Amino acid sequence: MKSVAMRFLPEENQAPVVVASGEGILGEKILTIAKKNQIPVVKDKNLAETLSYLPIDKEIPENLYKAVSAIFRFIIELERENLR
Image 1 (spheres, rainbow, N blue to C red):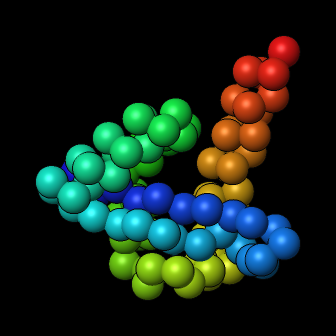
Image 2: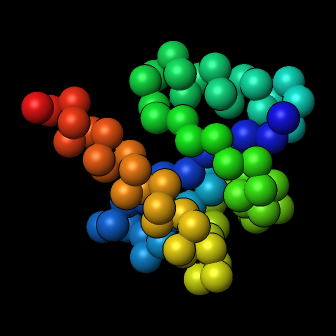
């Protein structure tokens, strides 16, 4: 299993940034840390595979904006639901 963690800080970045990526035990550790910290998890094997090849701390390329924006929209919607 591959796991990828991203962040997006509009005041610092123009696009989301990959902050962690791993496979096997490291992938499981990334998932465990996310769950422990109540960070939303989206399972998309193909996107995780693609994102895993990107350098850490670099913004994602424009050709991935659409796929990644769908994830961030989902997370924002989850956060809004939790505030209700």
